[in-house]
Image 1 (spheres, helix red, strand yellow):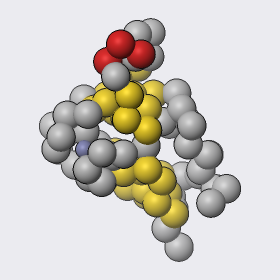
Image 2 (cartoon, protein in one colour):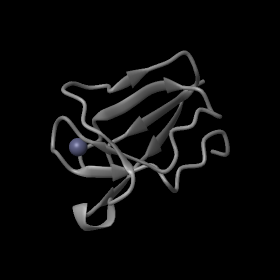
Image 3 (cartoon, protein in one colour):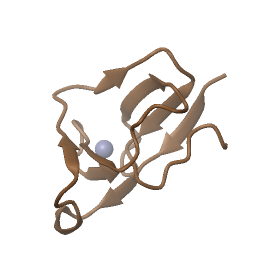
Length: 80
Ligand SMILES: [Zn+2]
């Protein structure tokens, strides 16, 4: 059972001091868990099969498709 979480699109003004992941292709990370994280703008998969407790919060992932910056801060894996 995969839970799909939509990341929050943010302005680049708000991403200082955060780790920024800039993948060249989708998805940036593939794991062995049950959570998918998708771009909040275009829905491209950013992370596939993350573990619910994986430390992917408080990070910026730039979508390889639309180049929007996605903030994972608000995602709460495993609660949906
Ligand atoms: Zn996107």
